[in-house]
Image 1: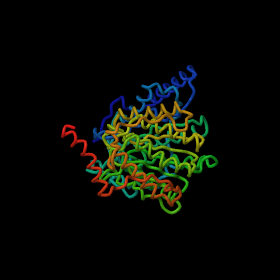
Image 2 (image 1 turned 135 degrees about the vertical axis):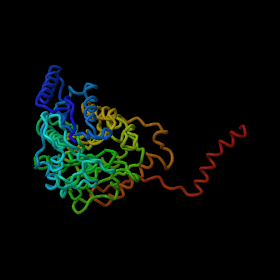
Image 3 (image 1 turned 60 degrees about the horizontal axis):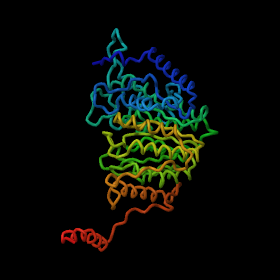
Length: 470
């Protein structure tokens, strides 16, 4: 049965014009205060509706973008940014990363979700929610065969306006690429929804319909061939971006570096250090499979020991960041312990790296993050770091987390296990294009039986002395 939408949710020309007036007023205020533009921001001001309205508990809901905007405006960061114009990505732009048959499948799914009954007030008729198959392959599914009942393993959905939302998400990011490369030449942040890094060449999974960052990378290379040849994508989302990896699996002109959680049963069960690419792209896909509970300090080690040397060898013309905030402490889908301060520090390091290698060409695109408070804090931390960029090479030092949170002593715990993961990655790439094995950080070695016994004795001695009253 067709669902009804609240009047406040109706996307009308009046709402679009009102949003544009608010953006114009913000720009006028910025000029009055003589506030320089330090970053560009992309966010569809009219929010095409994309919501599983039959499933109120679905993690990807419209409040995610509202939380990001609240984080930006609530901290007074809006005046330092330039908001780019809204636009919808074309079919040809979607084809940069996806097969035509897959885009046609998304169109059929959107058609199947359209309202079945004609009503006098068609703006209130939402139509149906279509649940995509687990593998996300749509090329051979007819419109009438798309399921309207959510399966036990279904997570990605399409409504009557979802493809429009995806086009707006990609289109805003591409407009941001134009702004950052051609006009103001400042770093940018695109608030993309739905996210994209799980969408592959012919699949839509993990809440993702199309791959925003992959399309942006190919768009930059095609539109600005004299400026952009090599693109580096850094994905810090807690989930591995298997879609991005698949799209650039054989491409030596796009370096994909992903730092994510890898554990049994944790989605999408991919992204090991041994997944390095194929053919000409062998060595241009780098995965750091981090343990459950990894922290800010673990990500800093990833930057220092993997991303930095790889970037300096690759020398990108543009750096794109898949910026998910589901690695933060309170996120319901992540199992990591990162903070907004950590992502702010990582942003400063990335900005300095972009200034060193890519003439400051640095663009962030929102991926995951399903706790509204974490989204507000994380988005604000990234944008604040872009607005307050420093000339220092390393930026302010990250305060060390307490030992009880990072469990830094001994061979177990997030930090030592992360060092082992980093070493595994460097070892996998020691003879490949990035040559990361040189000077690799050695993991904690297993102690001999004698060493273990001596250690146990030394630990027990103070307790024995104390028991004897010494």
